[in-house]
Length: 384
Image (cartoon, rainbow, N blue to C red; front, side, top):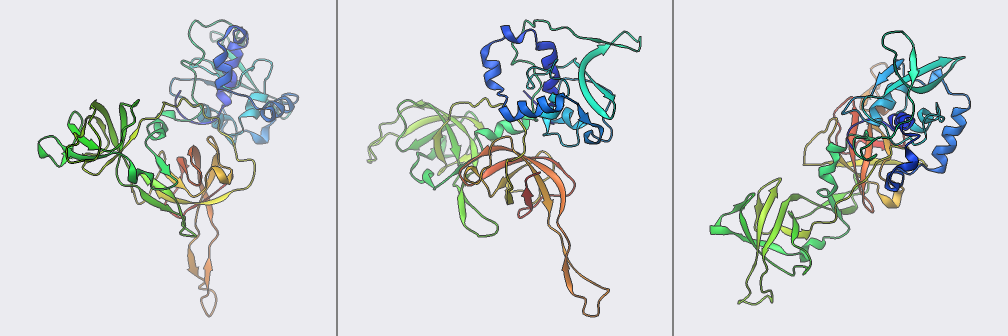
């Protein structure tokens, strides 16, 4: 699964797959749940199509799905609001049974009549100027493999296990590196490292973190959590004796991956099970208003495809897949048309979109999908 813009694409793929879904592995449908609200929206829209006013200004008449496309990007070609994928699906529910599956090579056709639009699946009829509907056919490959992703998965996947926010600074009591081989200061991939602490008996792969830093709310200054700076990974090579005495034999590890060089004092935490998540872009159910805490990686500003930390989390109603509007704070200027040149704050301007992909209790991480101006800590976000 990879890449950008909503689930519209997925819509069409189901046309080819409508006949084969019955024989498809059950995990496919389980990985791509269709909510009752999404289905109801699609059914309502399917009765009459989508008003032409809801189409993107330059919506194409046809589009051929390409490798590297995303549902988000393709839905954005057809609709003004890419996350409103049920409406794209609803354009043709007869062909589109599962709005989460679409494949490269499929042709999406936008049919307009009586001020409405519907989406169909077809292919060029050899230059004859017409179109031919594609009949359902069974594919030999897995439904999960090769389908188009909802958003640019490759941009966020490295952060799923690397961007970690702790409610307290629990890494204080975690096992820690104490030395490198041959008295080196820094440790890189392939180097041996020695550590002390209580290692879980059933774990042999560990993430390496630098000392966590507090994430503070830009408004209240309250500590919302502790962001652990990801260093890399290490495999347990030889267990130590433990005990915490002078005769203790440290545990030996081999550094297997580094985002930055490891050093004495870095903390160790077991590598969690790998997560395979299908993200369904959608707007929050209610209003939300928050601030960007920081740019991941200590950058001063951020642009498209960078990661930011948000001061809202699970307890505030945020969830994976939420699409948020990004606002640039209006400047304070002096009005030159008045005798006293009063200070006036210009209105905030919407200038981008965020995609929430990792949610903790009071903090979330989001990918900047689009942006017009550099993003800085303190910028505001809302529901789209």
